[in-house]
Image (cartoon, rainbow, N blue to C red; front, side, top):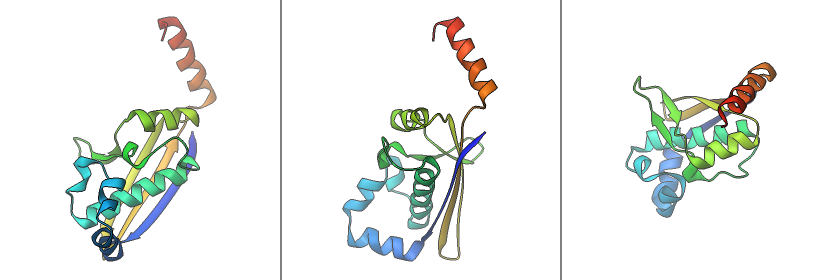
Length: 134
């Protein structure tokens, strides 16, 4: 069941100028693995993080460093399962965040859908955890 949807768009040139003007911003907004990427990729990742915060309904309990964007084996983007993100999703009754992002013509855009288990799925998962002691 969908719990939240977020979208964000970033002007790549403006974002790049901001990173040049405030060098500490790169370290504050991005994980070490993300920091070396080109400006267009960083802008898309920033849009993804902003879209996730919107889909979650706010940034309570999560930091920029908790929101690392990775590429899966199939090259599809997704969020790393960090302790902070897992806790933020759990606190909101969610279990998964889906991500799509793109950059073209000087604009980076990201869409995020946060999913929670339906009542039946949640009850079934809880019953399974009770049986296994988890």
